[in-house]
Length: 178
Ligand SMILES: [Zn+2]
Ligand SMILES: [Zn+2]
Image (cartoon, rainbow, N blue to C red):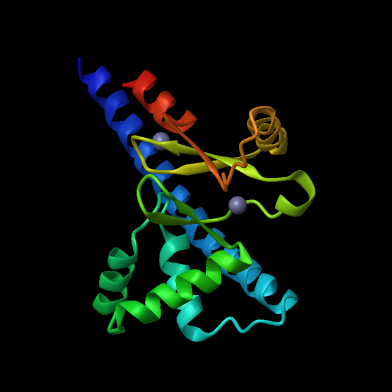
Protein backbone atom coordinates (compact mmCIF):
# COMPACT_ATOMS: atom_id res chain seq x y z
CA UNK A 1 0.00 0.00 0.00
CA UNK A 2 2.74 2.35 1.04
CA UNK A 3 4.62 1.51 -2.10
CA UNK A 4 1.65 2.45 -4.25
CA UNK A 5 1.36 5.80 -2.50
CA UNK A 6 5.03 6.52 -3.07
CA UNK A 7 4.72 5.68 -6.73
CA UNK A 8 1.72 7.96 -7.03
CA UNK A 9 3.58 10.76 -5.32
CA UNK A 10 6.56 10.28 -7.59
CA UNK A 11 4.22 10.38 -10.56
CA UNK A 12 2.59 13.57 -9.32
CA UNK A 13 6.01 15.15 -8.81
CA UNK A 14 7.10 14.13 -12.27
CA UNK A 15 3.94 15.60 -13.70
CA UNK A 16 4.62 18.87 -11.89
CA UNK A 17 8.21 18.91 -13.18
CA UNK A 18 6.93 18.29 -16.69
CA UNK A 19 4.50 21.16 -16.52
CA UNK A 20 7.24 23.46 -15.12
CA UNK A 21 9.43 22.58 -18.08
CA UNK A 22 6.53 23.21 -20.43
CA UNK A 23 6.09 26.67 -18.94
CA UNK A 24 9.78 27.44 -19.30
CA UNK A 25 9.67 26.31 -22.89
CA UNK A 26 6.65 28.53 -23.45
CA UNK A 27 8.59 31.53 -22.10
CA UNK A 28 11.44 30.86 -24.45
CA UNK A 29 8.94 30.50 -27.26
CA UNK A 30 7.48 33.91 -26.49
CA UNK A 31 10.79 35.73 -27.03
CA UNK A 32 11.26 33.89 -30.27
CA UNK A 33 7.74 34.59 -31.52
CA UNK A 34 8.02 38.29 -30.62
CA UNK A 35 11.30 38.44 -32.50
CA UNK A 36 9.71 36.91 -35.57
CA UNK A 37 6.81 39.37 -35.39
CA UNK A 38 9.32 42.22 -35.31
CA UNK A 39 11.02 40.79 -38.39
CA UNK A 40 7.68 40.54 -40.19
CA UNK A 41 7.09 44.25 -39.53
CA UNK A 42 10.65 45.13 -40.60
CA UNK A 43 10.21 43.24 -43.88
CA UNK A 44 7.23 45.45 -44.68
CA UNK A 45 8.95 48.61 -43.52
CA UNK A 46 6.35 49.01 -40.80
CA UNK A 47 7.10 49.99 -37.24
CA UNK A 48 6.74 47.40 -34.52
CA UNK A 49 5.92 50.10 -31.99
CA UNK A 50 6.09 49.53 -28.26
CA UNK A 51 2.30 49.41 -28.12
CA UNK A 52 2.10 46.88 -30.96
CA UNK A 53 4.71 44.77 -29.23
CA UNK A 54 2.82 44.95 -25.91
CA UNK A 55 -0.46 43.95 -27.54
CA UNK A 56 1.22 41.20 -29.53
CA UNK A 57 2.97 39.82 -26.43
CA UNK A 58 -0.35 39.56 -24.58
CA UNK A 59 -1.85 37.62 -27.46
CA UNK A 60 1.19 35.40 -27.96
CA UNK A 61 1.61 34.68 -24.23
CA UNK A 62 -1.56 32.63 -24.03
CA UNK A 63 -2.19 29.28 -25.61
CA UNK A 64 -5.70 30.01 -26.79
CA UNK A 65 -7.29 33.12 -28.19
CA UNK A 66 -7.94 36.40 -26.40
CA UNK A 67 -10.50 39.18 -26.88
CA UNK A 68 -9.64 42.87 -27.22
CA UNK A 69 -11.08 43.77 -23.80
CA UNK A 70 -9.11 41.04 -22.09
CA UNK A 71 -5.96 42.47 -23.68
CA UNK A 72 -6.93 45.91 -22.35
CA UNK A 73 -7.46 44.50 -18.87
CA UNK A 74 -4.19 42.60 -18.83
CA UNK A 75 -2.24 45.65 -19.94
CA UNK A 76 -4.03 47.78 -17.32
CA UNK A 77 -3.00 45.29 -14.63
CA UNK A 78 0.58 45.85 -15.74
CA UNK A 79 0.15 49.59 -15.45
CA UNK A 80 -0.49 50.42 -19.10
CA UNK A 81 -3.89 52.05 -19.36
CA UNK A 82 -5.05 52.49 -22.92
CA UNK A 83 -8.11 53.62 -24.81
CA UNK A 84 -9.85 50.70 -26.54
CA UNK A 85 -9.26 52.39 -29.91
CA UNK A 86 -5.48 52.20 -29.40
CA UNK A 87 -5.68 48.47 -28.81
CA UNK A 88 -7.97 48.01 -31.82
CA UNK A 89 -5.55 49.93 -34.03
CA UNK A 90 -2.66 47.76 -32.89
CA UNK A 91 -4.71 44.63 -33.48
CA UNK A 92 -5.50 45.83 -37.01
CA UNK A 93 -1.83 46.41 -37.74
CA UNK A 94 -0.87 43.00 -36.33
CA UNK A 95 -3.57 41.28 -38.41
CA UNK A 96 -2.55 43.18 -41.52
CA UNK A 97 1.01 41.90 -41.20
CA UNK A 98 -0.35 38.42 -40.45
CA UNK A 99 1.35 37.82 -37.10
CA UNK A 100 -2.05 37.34 -35.46
CA UNK A 101 -5.35 35.98 -36.77
CA UNK A 102 -8.93 36.50 -35.73
CA UNK A 103 -11.14 33.66 -34.61
CA UNK A 104 -14.47 34.83 -36.00
CA UNK A 105 -16.56 32.49 -33.87
CA UNK A 106 -15.19 34.02 -30.66
CA UNK A 107 -14.23 37.47 -31.87
CA UNK A 108 -10.83 36.76 -30.36
CA UNK A 109 -7.26 36.82 -31.57
CA UNK A 110 -4.38 34.38 -31.54
CA UNK A 111 -0.75 34.57 -32.56
CA UNK A 112 0.27 32.92 -35.80
CA UNK A 113 2.75 30.16 -35.11
CA UNK A 114 3.32 29.24 -38.72
CA UNK A 115 5.41 31.35 -40.98
CA UNK A 116 5.09 29.77 -44.37
CA UNK A 117 1.59 30.96 -45.31
CA UNK A 118 3.02 32.55 -48.44
CA UNK A 119 4.50 29.26 -49.63
CA UNK A 120 2.02 26.69 -48.40
CA UNK A 121 -1.16 28.66 -48.89
CA UNK A 122 -3.94 29.67 -46.59
CA UNK A 123 -4.53 27.69 -43.43
CA UNK A 124 -7.66 26.37 -41.82
CA UNK A 125 -7.96 27.02 -38.09
CA UNK A 126 -8.55 24.08 -35.78
CA UNK A 127 -9.86 25.52 -32.51
CA UNK A 128 -9.89 23.31 -29.40
CA UNK A 129 -13.12 23.62 -27.41
CA UNK A 130 -11.37 22.51 -24.22
CA UNK A 131 -8.10 24.43 -23.94
CA UNK A 132 -8.86 27.16 -26.47
CA UNK A 133 -5.68 26.42 -28.41
CA UNK A 134 -5.70 26.99 -32.15
CA UNK A 135 -3.73 24.89 -34.62
CA UNK A 136 -3.23 26.06 -38.18
CA UNK A 137 -2.97 23.62 -41.04
CA UNK A 138 -2.17 24.76 -44.58
CA UNK A 139 -5.17 23.95 -46.76
CA UNK A 140 -5.10 26.07 -49.89
CA UNK A 141 -6.88 23.31 -51.82
CA UNK A 142 -9.92 23.67 -49.56
CA UNK A 143 -10.19 27.35 -50.35
CA UNK A 144 -9.75 26.58 -54.06
CA UNK A 145 -12.46 23.95 -53.86
CA UNK A 146 -14.87 26.36 -52.15
CA UNK A 147 -14.19 28.88 -54.90
CA UNK A 148 -14.77 26.31 -57.65
CA UNK A 149 -17.97 25.00 -56.08
CA UNK A 150 -19.28 28.51 -55.56
CA UNK A 151 -18.39 29.50 -59.12
CA UNK A 152 -20.33 26.51 -60.44
CA UNK A 153 -23.51 28.16 -59.19
CA UNK A 154 -22.42 31.66 -60.11
CA UNK A 155 -21.65 32.60 -56.51
CA UNK A 156 -18.75 34.84 -55.51
CA UNK A 157 -17.44 33.66 -52.14
CA UNK A 158 -15.85 36.04 -49.67
CA UNK A 159 -14.53 33.34 -47.36
CA UNK A 160 -11.40 34.55 -45.62
CA UNK A 161 -10.79 31.81 -43.12
CA UNK A 162 -12.24 28.44 -42.26
CA UNK A 163 -12.59 27.44 -38.63
CA UNK A 164 -13.12 23.94 -37.35
CA UNK A 165 -13.90 23.38 -33.67
CA UNK A 166 -13.06 20.17 -31.84
CA UNK A 167 -10.57 18.63 -29.42
CA UNK A 168 -6.79 19.00 -29.82
CA UNK A 169 -4.27 16.17 -29.48
CA UNK A 170 -3.04 17.13 -26.00
CA UNK A 171 -6.56 17.46 -24.58
CA UNK A 172 -7.43 14.09 -26.12
CA UNK A 173 -4.34 12.50 -24.52
CA UNK A 174 -5.12 14.15 -21.19
CA UNK A 175 -8.63 12.71 -21.27
CA UNK A 176 -7.20 9.26 -22.03
CA UNK A 177 -4.72 9.28 -19.15
CA UNK A 178 -7.31 10.36 -16.59
ZN1 LIG B 1 -1.05 31.84 -39.27
ZN1 LIG C 1 -7.02 21.38 -26.37
